[in-house]
Image (cartoon, rainbow, N blue to C red):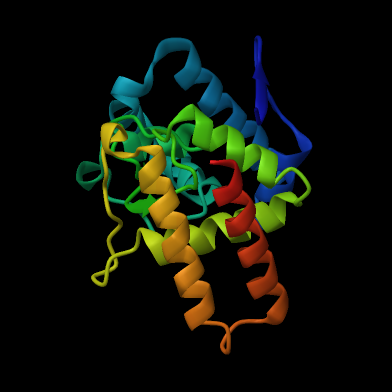
Length: 207
């Protein structure tokens, strides 16, 4: 977890690294820590949107900046899930509160692989197969799989309920990923292709 909350919130090295990359000053980190602390003491995921609405303009701009948004977000137009995921420590896994397999973050949508509503067996296989990869390599692999298997032509992500995400579903998804890699072989680096194929074959073998 990216923070440890007792009487206040302190950030670990990963969170600090993410905030540094987003040009969050030490003063702003302290201010963001206070915001998270206030939310965690008196609120819960169900009223995250209400909490964001209670912030001052400067506080909301800071939350947006820490969350990686360059432009202001219209809070009235985002989901409560989108609001809640803006109130997590940088680097902390996004939460899929409504179980549709897509994480709303502010006014954006993300799909992690495997998603939060995947069977535990799939998550365990992912952890086993990617154990030797760096965090950066895992994130690149996760992003590539998500974009090539869940992303629709109109730019939206496929939303599939947890009950529909069976082991067979993930086998088919991984096979589709292999098809993508073979089609893209001449357009991506040999390293990217090899790592993708090695992952997919190991993933299928252990499912």
